[in-house]
Image (tube, rainbow, N blue to C red; front, side, top):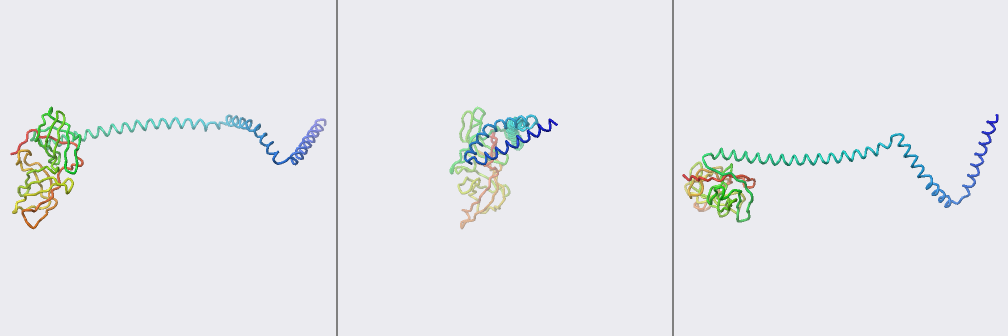
Length: 275
């Protein structure tokens, strides 16, 4: 019974305190209330944040921050592995390119096995509107001399015009100063092909005999006349015949067998045979 009376008194005291606070707060100016609120928040918020942190710690909610740290570590590891893969890919591409080059050399050797040849890379292209020269990575120390024939898998490239100890400059057949004595492979008619400014990777065939019958898609090859180029090396295909009022002036355009834009490896013939 004593306990019930004590509990009742506490309840009455709490009720009175609440009523007094209600009256006081209702009479406080709103602006002053804001100041009180701010002061209260400044005091209570740090405590509340601390309690919230402890609550999260106890409940395991701090794992979110641990997960972020772990994700950052995994991201760095993935970046490292990606870099290693890119490096491996570059090395693979280099090996692949080297294998392709060796394959080209083998094909060239097999195709021109009747010739003594030296393989070479193109290391520079001296190309302007008037010049179509290439520089290869073999020279005098390799036995390279001026006027040696240079070929590719598809056919004739040109001939050596100058050398150093380690390099050689080659005038290609598409150079405007180039002139090659040829035969039409089907009729054996002689013609001359020269480089031209009119069309890229195209030769101009002229000095066509008046009684010669030439057709589109006829193949053109070296005649062996002139002392530079060996006989029978493919040059290209006739793609267009231009007839003029005077039949002696007619000419044709020849598409080269060699794709000079993609040319990378060549062979230099060291025992030219012009028979």
